[in-house]
Image (cartoon, rainbow, N blue to C red; front, side):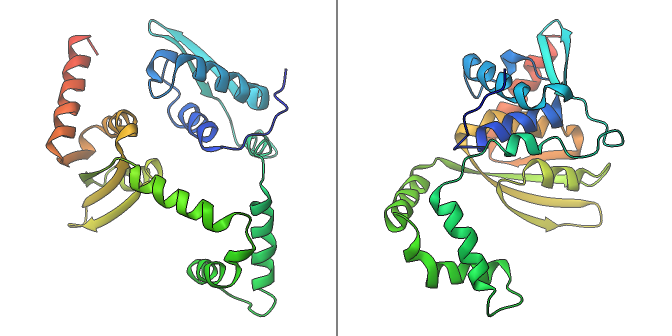
Length: 230
């Protein structure tokens, strides 16, 4: 049975879809950032949209859910079914018309110029804009941020893959030579387990330089996997 309600916060759904699509090897117990009940609810919701493209395999750790999509055999991208479930606020709709209004007198604007015009000329038209802005600032200050420094060897498209996996994080990239890069990531500590798992997926192509606390957690996880026979 399809879920009919619209989703206000789409980021949680997007994260699960990303996990199923990019990885596809995790069992239910390995999604430890949320509760098992939350996992079940979101999985059922995604199945109602994309059930024709979802598969699973059974192994000793449990059932692994993943997407099985062959782009050569489908006429359109099925992920649009998920995005159709996203709700839109009055401010989302207002933003659309504000951007259209900007281009009445301008043919070309960069993303930075659009953001500046929104701030300087259109900010007051958004509902509860000042109050929400200050709440956002307060929330950002309360986030527990940490910095992770990586050294990457660009083999097997490692640089492109890292940029994709961590596209949602603030980052700086420094080229050391033709094959090596230093990447600095800023992440929320609440997401540390997920970041750690993603780093491990790159094997020897990504080395953690700092902080030492993160390196220690990596070592502990690797030792735990070795002791379990992986």
